[in-house]
Amino acid sequence: MGQPKILLLGPPGAGKGTQSSNLVEAFGVEHVTTGDALRSNKEMDISDLGLEYDTPGEYMDQGELVPDEVVNAIVEKALTSADGFVLDGYPRNLEQAEQLESMTDLDGIVSLSVSEDELVDRLTGRRVCDECGENYHVEFDQPENEGVCDECGGELIQREDDEEDAVRNRLDVFAENTEPVIEYYSDRADFVDIDGEQSLDTVWEELQAAVEDTV
Ligand code: ADP
Ligand code: ADP
Ligand code: ZN
Image (tube, rainbow, N blue to C red; front, side, top):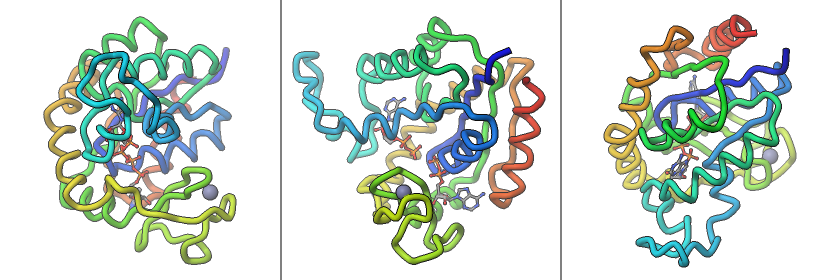
């Protein structure tokens, strides 16, 4: 039996990235995250696709979804090279969910639920490591030394799309495009919903138990 293949769903700010780091450490899976992959390719030239913008970054800074054809290719490549994985940030619409079905079989699907007010507080207070992508929060998850990553010593910065206007737009994009994806998966027998508004440690205990059940 190989390592687990886990899909982690939830709105922006639900704690997917934070809890994915725990899964990587505990289960030795790979973290496949479209957000990080796209951030390292923000300036990639996609002008030959004839889309609205010529780079992924132009979509991202406004909180809009990057077109499916760009994102699907990134995920397909990452999943074929991974044994076990936690997939975070994808699928974000029903077309992507359909693509995912043709790429791999999942062992477990976990959704983190968090209310909108809490999401705004979490996203506007989020700080990320410029080097390794680790997530922190100015109030809820502080590093040992202010502004410095515990994991690698990198500088902690605020993402451009974590400013309030872009945050509101991302939550609208989520409600319109990604909520139907969660509904779609919620009918499956292996779907688990976790109250993501609990403490970091309690969410982790419940998530760990859910993933242990799949192996
Ligand atoms: P996502 O990847 O789902 O967008 P993150 O893991 O980046 O979410 O978390 C968003 C912000 O909320 C981060 O600043 C993180 O430190 C904080 N956070 C995550 N989980 C919790 C929690 N259970 N309670 C309080 N703050 C949290
Ligand atoms: P969050 O912390 O809000 O969950 P991510 O880091 O997952 O944010 O994503 C940041 C941005 O990258 C999104 O707002 C979007 O522009 C783009 N993006 C990430 N994943 C996808 C996807 N599956 N489809 C389209 N765009 C994506
Ligand atoms: Zn770091």
